[in-house]
Image 1 (cartoon, rainbow, N blue to C red):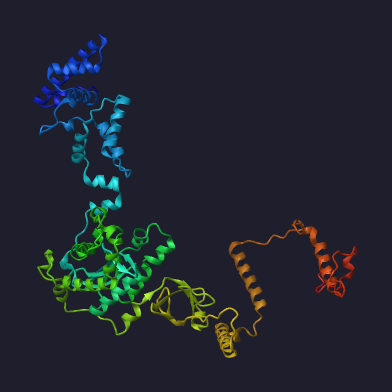
Image 2: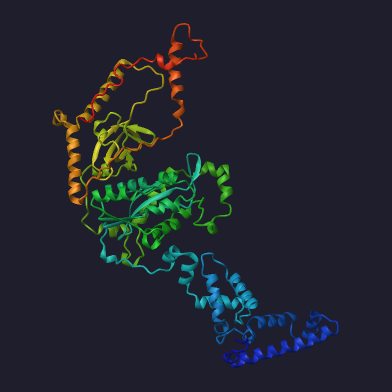
Length: 595
């Protein structure tokens, strides 16, 4: 492919202009050659030639560079609607460009453009390549945004930014039917325990009415804050029919990347199995949103609204990202006056409660809201579900992860519970969950991990200081409890059934019966090996130490004799004669000789 092969594809006016520039380049090359032969330089020749024809030196240099890269089409003006950008990049060059550009290494356009220029010159491909500005325009027209996002940013970004999604028909659901829950961190700083913190909100929003039905503020979000915010909501409005919450992996990786797995589990782990079990007991279906996908979590729009209407009004607003971060924020956080006047978490929570009331009472501009407020739409449904009295308190407590019952009970937060609890004893080795009051850890409720059936209420084990005296009554109580627990374990089986049973004979006959059945099924027989048994000695490191062990035993006996405590050397005697002879040695219990 020659550089001038596509001259006929150019518009007439641009073709004539390109040919004019080519003529100037050719004339300059002749002029420059003559100058060099007369001991001149190319630079001097360029200056003299440019002055003679009235064209700038840099312009001539740019034309030469474009012609060397792109051939005659490179000299054509690419501006206007008759631009020739689309015709002046070779397919091979564009394919190589895409290979480098469409990767998650995210090479810049300029880097990829320079690379294909190098390949073009080095391999003499004869590619037509536009200038850098033309390359930007070509990419914009010929590489769709969705393709760029997918290949350069990955599937997660593609799903969030470009992938089509199914819109919810607002008429298909009723108010108080589906709730959506999620965490979000406030973009402002408040004072908590003499430190600056950015609090988190855990919010439940009704999907139909957009009403905030329950919320809870905390320093670290987790499944506990989800349950506490849900408890507030259910106490006011009853349970929904379905809930959608953020995916457990979202908390495990996105929020706490960079810390240990143990720290992530203790701070932000969402136990999907436990959550699903609790909601199932309330006859509430549960689903988990797709991780990192804002479209799967409609509540993200609410968080954006809260940020713009509420959080941004605070003096220590830090912005959604570094671009929106105030320049003087760091100085403010260090200023003693700001620290003294800093708003406390309690005050912040009071203000947020007022904002939620106003938000729920204000009309909404969404099309399906018909200028009604979230509260008005929510109250339009007259039928609401309710739970039996006390059930909410039982279910929506603070729950532990799965724990294993040990011989001293169950260990939680470094404390053992149920040491002498007989109901807990029979679950030793099994998985359980605890529910508890975080303000009173003297007792915990123990449930089967799989069924959530209450096993017992376990008390905190009593600890005794090392070396401390124990009164007799306390010791008797402890021993009594220990015997009671042992009795429960013994009574777990009915010993009367096996009291007169010959267990050995039963076991042997059962083994014979099993082997007999196996032979009948497989047709196998036992092949007996005739002849003498072969004995294969096994060497051990102690083979040569038997005599020494016997000598040490006797030496120990001799040292105990009166006056022999200071003996340091053994006597050179045969210690075997000092051993007490076993009068039954050599006597067989069973005579296995053949008659």
